[in-house]
Amino acid sequence: MTDRTKILLDESEMPTSWYNIVPDLPEPPPPALHPGTHDPAGPEDFLPLFPMDLILQEVSTDPYIEIPEEVQEVYKLWRPSPLFRAHRLEKALDTPAHIYYKYEGVSPAGSHKPNTAVPQAYYNKKAGINKLTTETGAGQWGTALAFACSLFDMELDVWQVRASYDQKPYRKAMIEMFGATIHPSPSELTEAGRAILAADPDSPGSLGIAISEAVEMAAPNPDVRYALGSVLNHVLMHQTIIGEEALLQLAKVEETPDVIVGCTGGGSNFGGLTFPFLREKMAGKMNPTIRAVEPEACPSLTKGVYAYDFGDTAGMTPLMKMHTLGHDFVPDPIHAGGLRYHGMAPLLSHIYELGLIEAISIPQSECFEAGVNFARTEGIIPAPEPTHALAATVREALKAKESGEETVILTALCGHGHLDMAAYAQYLAGEIVDFEYPEDKVNDALTRLPQVAS
Ligand SMILES: *Cc1c(COP(=O)(O)O)cnc(C)c1O
Image 1 (tube, rainbow, N blue to C red):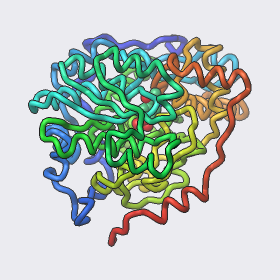
Image 2 (tube, rainbow, N blue to C red; image 1 turned 45 degrees about the vertical axis):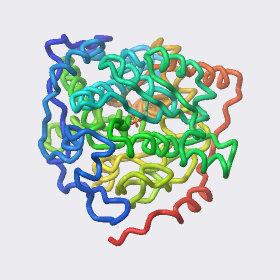
Image 3 (cartoon, rainbow, N blue to C red; image 1 turned 180 degrees about the horizontal axis):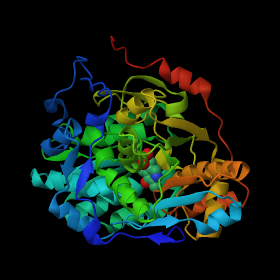
């Protein structure tokens, strides 16, 4: 059965629960702290930002949470998503490895982001909220939430990181197409944005700055809530439907993965793919190596410190213990805008500290090369973010070629790159530069970490 190209599930086989890995971990993750008192943050500290249903999911210790029927119905617009065997890439690499990719680019936004955008809009609407704010990097999250808000008849204001706003103009059109409003970040509309612009009128922006602006516009207003596209426990949990489906799909072809690789910006597509497999690994049912891949220009897991830090640049969010490069670190403008975040999901950081996963960083030119080779063999143009996972997949496949082993590799192709063609055009013209790890800039940002008594 292993010669199949597409492994599909019927709609009736779609998982009906999200998986919460927290209760299965040998130690619980450290709590979030109130930014002022540094006491463990309670649900009330999150209420200005999120509806209670999502806060309860954020701190839940139930291993499974049922997906509301209304959300399941929307999921069926693109789920279950296909799992592909990359026969043509394997052949081109002349590797005995079996390469599988779970493709999330079939969603309306073109990435995995709607898996959490839809439930987040749903729970807000259920709580009587009709307007959300958010940030977006490459524009995938802004598009996904705009799509979700259009389904539930909600308003949305999006702050898009300036570097990406200029690089990817059609994301703006797409977000407006779904009925949302978009602003480049830093903007003159918020105190946080004005402060950054005063110091640097040409700031390329960052996800941390855009989060500050979106939070500032939501927190003081009881009718407006904020939605985050990655990093938080409930976001990673919503994404576990990816891994739950992939488990069922690999079982259909009687394969178990030896290596699972995924790209990590805030950690949601990686957590979503790998947590169900990690559950099986912790239960002794399989033993895959699980590896996160991040950009060399923004390597929070491999080079960041594990410490309490703010999720945003201005320091308005609760403090989270995570791998961080410093909340005011502004990464160089690499094309994988979704990976330009100073921190890593606290849950993923904790799992990394427990030694349950590995991490590596890769420079963007190697990633673009892998992306172009993937397009020329498998036909799908990947978003710049998952080209990091593809570059790691290629490294692993070449290792298998050397050893002659039929390594089973699984990766998440978490989005297509149809709106990233300006970046590919630059690569094809030989104009892509690599940004080395900016050690001095990081060390400087780390001097401004909040001081938290341990
Ligand atoms: C947002 C995004 C990412 C980065 O976010 P994660 O939470 O790490 O998944 C990666 N790839 C794509 C296609 C994205 O849209």
